[in-house]
Figure 1: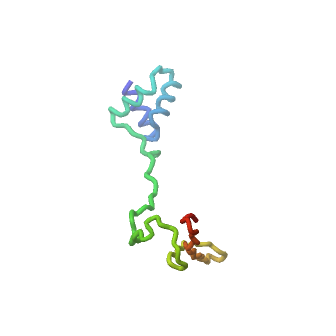
Figure 2: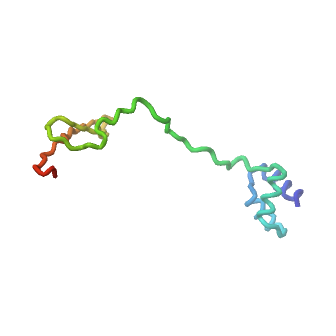
Figure 3: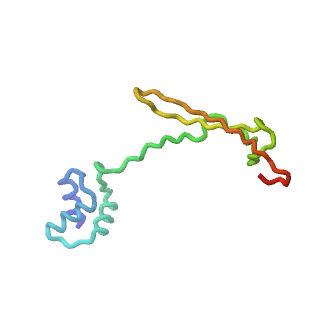
Length: 118
């Protein structure tokens, strides 16, 4: 059986994997399990090189730049105006490859009632 698998692999110039070789052997009238074909091809070192999956592109580069200190420490309320200000930058793509940046500033000041509830 190894000879048939090797001949079929070489006949198709190494472009067939175990599934296609199994199908080819079935067409020729041989009864063999696809797992056995896969095992024999592995033992013979036969591997389809044309359709080997390549690794995907990964753009993640880890932590880049400085990480700001956590000054708020989840204390988002303040009893003084303009004491705690937060912002977030948003980028918009406009026509003609131009970019527009929006940076809204939000004051975390909130009036505190006498009983301490907001």
